[in-house]
Image (tube, rainbow, N blue to C red):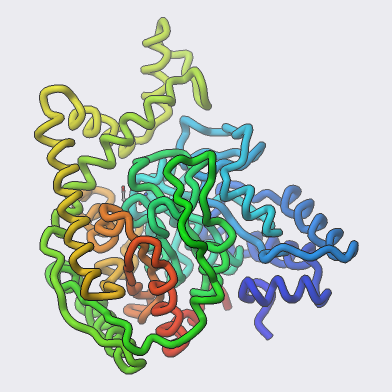
Length: 488
Ligand code: GLN
């Protein structure tokens, strides 16, 4: 039997329901695990011991009263620190929100609690989710459990590392350009960016609102599907959430993938993709075919403009969203400047890190009167072209398969002085955000002792086919059962 800290969500819930272990014992085991590995990994910005034990006790009490338990009863989770938690500090990895305690829960926070999940802590991330390595956190970097000298990816690096290291059974991240899928790939776990609108963004601190989406991170496809089932669905508090046909985790495991049409876009397999990564993805395509899928090379000709388009649109939206941190309403207030404007300027100067400041400047420039047409408006048009490329591809294919990240985890500090190299970490993930479609990353191999991620994308609101393909592949290859050294 696996130790409690590496059991699946379903196994944990079943153990609680049957009385084999209490939710409190599960929580304790994970808190012990956190104490053991956290000094090396730094995945969590806050460990909410008291709140967790109270939530666990509530689950145990409900069981002893004979009540039916929620689908995630007793399951220990962590939330990326851009997700609001009532009364629990939510810093977004930024000094400007140090110690800020939201007066309300995000919808996903509330839904997980209703499902019986136990929140153990808040996970480290790049400041306001801007980055690909978690090195932009004002609270120091998180380390990759597979190799402590490597980054865990980002921006949801803490959420990924905590799951890989067995500190929690699952977590939530947010994905604007790859921030769930890329760290999942680099830490050897499963990470799903749902369709834009599938999960409520109410209470998610906004980075680029037309791209942001919350999604699950876990050690298996089934676990990720169960988390998605718990958090998805329309929400009156988020007008962009969609009343789509419900997502069923059970359906993911049903049936086989015979006849599934797999497209392999050639733009994602050439220049800039590491040889070992491309080889692992090719082998994965063959594995899918041996299970009855058919695969064919295809093309998404405008997808290569995603990076340039993203770095106009995302900073533009960020410059607007981050205007609210003015030293008055939230978090840090600097006494440095004189007068209201001076105070705001001094607070923003002291509160924001370098990457965030740069993006605010770029975004403000792209939106300014003289340049709006040349940059923002043009980027919006290119975004439409990218979406149309995907629409055309999905007339011929059910899913598209690519690498998640062009390389395995890179070294801490390796790309800090090379912003372009850092941004290229997201070339394969950004297009799905441009098109709003779902994409999952699952482990598909190892190189240099580090995990490789496979990305599977699908039609809007077709998480079921995406995860069905992922599940079939995972069960046939079992890469997801590999554990990092820190886990032994
Ligand atoms: N790495 C990308 C960026 O820096 C994407 C981040 C994200 O998805 N939140 O903006």
